[in-house]
Length: 270
Length: 153
Image 1 (cartoon, rainbow over the protein chains, first blue to last red):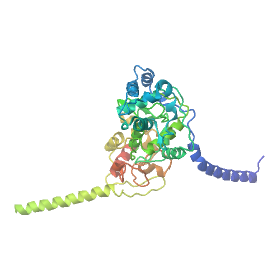
Image 2: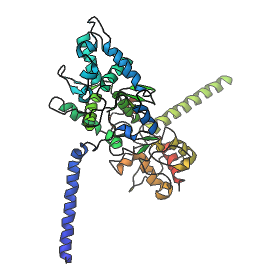
Image 3: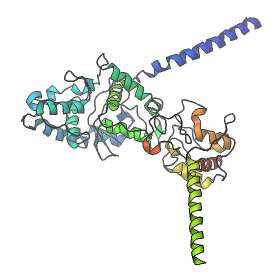
Image 4: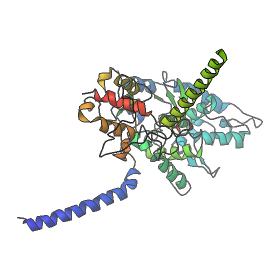
């Protein structure tokens, strides 16, 4: 039995405990937010059956056109060096297996954070002695698709370490930053509301494991940065440039979030 | 006489133009001020009463884009989102003043809400140049939308 006095004391204690708990929850919220969705669910699992079928069939998947284009480029000599990618890297099916799972990274060749597109262009400039491919050009999409395709089925495995931590932290801050006239953060749609309907579209967890993707809306292949810019446009925020530090940092955070999800390149999405 | 008339017409035209220009500036910048009472903005933002038919247009057009997140089968739309609560019956659940505050600045009621503030320009970051200093909806569009939502009972 609890008498009135005791129950009053208990309820007072409960009130204090509740207040303390509220402070603790408020205090730990950022840490909780930083956790990855587990288990991570690929965007393809939110897609309709026809989109899934299109991605699964290499003969029907339009993204395979870019992969084929990339294969040609891999073997084509470029610039005065006369070197092709294959001159140094040999058979991509063997040497590029698993490479895409580790990007973006601060590679030994550069103190900068590079994604796959940036790494390919670094080779063009340093090794082949030619101009970098413009971001979103058919050639860069093709070569990136071809290299990423060699990792299809392997889990994303970007590591956060001392060399890239500041990029990671910045990427995470961007992910949770409300912005634009619509004042929305990535997390509000892609974590708090994944699986719900935005008009006719199902909101995915926003993983980048299938890029470059063929998007039906674009009638073309496109990079992750193109897709990210589409979200910036949607929330009416200033759009960072393709290949900008902001999008690279965000890309690193997204790859960390997607840890364990298999590479699907070339993915197909609505 | 003809000369005088044409001068008069021109003068009147300039005055009208000036008034129109002043009126336009007043509507967008600064925003119409309003009072919040509890969870309501009791008074309309504009002198002209909201028009439900125009409100339906705002709701369904790219201006309001409400159906991106809310279902309102009464509109006859085919595709509707479900991020926010359905709008069916919202006119019975909420007063005009409550609807007004929820459209103008829902984040005053719930700081973490996904619902954008449709009549607000302060406290936003990295707004695209084309939208800087502008609310999503005009004061009149807010009133029209409130009027339409009140018909959903």
